[in-house]
Amino acid sequence: KSVGLLANRGLAHEGLYQWQEALDDYNEAIDLGKSIGNKYPYVLNSRGNVFSSLGRWEEARADYLASAAIFQESRMLSATI
Image 1 (cartoon, helix red, strand yellow):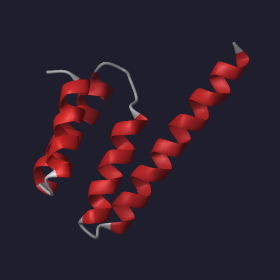
Image 2 (tube, helix red, strand yellow):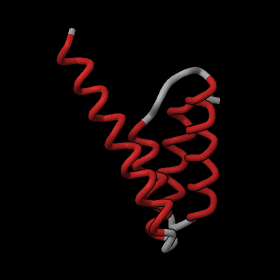
Image 3 (cartoon, helix red, strand yellow):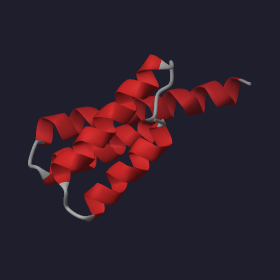
Image 4 (cartoon, helix red, strand yellow):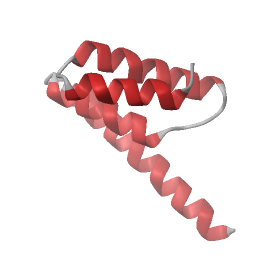
């Protein structure tokens, strides 16, 4: 499996309002990314969208904040190169 394939399938499930299936795919993509030492802010943001759609506001907020922090960190790192 790949992070990209899982994230894209999660996005397809999200588009069909299949929230649990989307959440499962995003969770697996995030776990796979961690296992190979990468962070995927877009996947965190997408999972936040699913949490929001499910009314799980605190979890959505946590994912949005984590995603924003990764984007900010990446921006700062690229500015130093």
